[in-house]
Length: 88
Image (cartoon, rainbow, N blue to C red; front, top):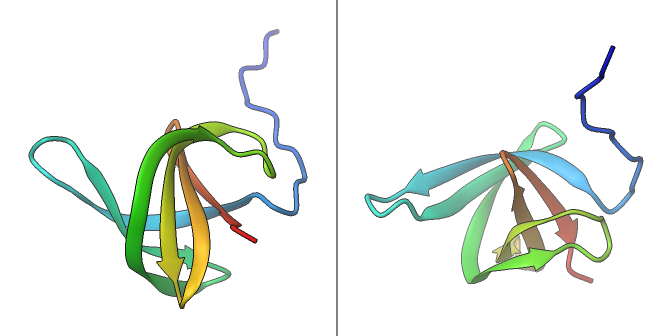
């Protein structure tokens, strides 16, 4: 039998997260907050949005360069899942 479940790799830089986002009438997505470790963090500002690969974590998608609690963070939308990695 074929197994179509994607493989998960234990990568300390790749943190899957829940994201609250706003969708406009043109289909653009703007993340507003993210939840990690049962704590919600407001996204203070999004400075860049572009298709990109995650070199630290593996994977690719739309990369949102964000300021979260005064720290630069990369938030990725990979297919239908969100993950983040510290920018440093």
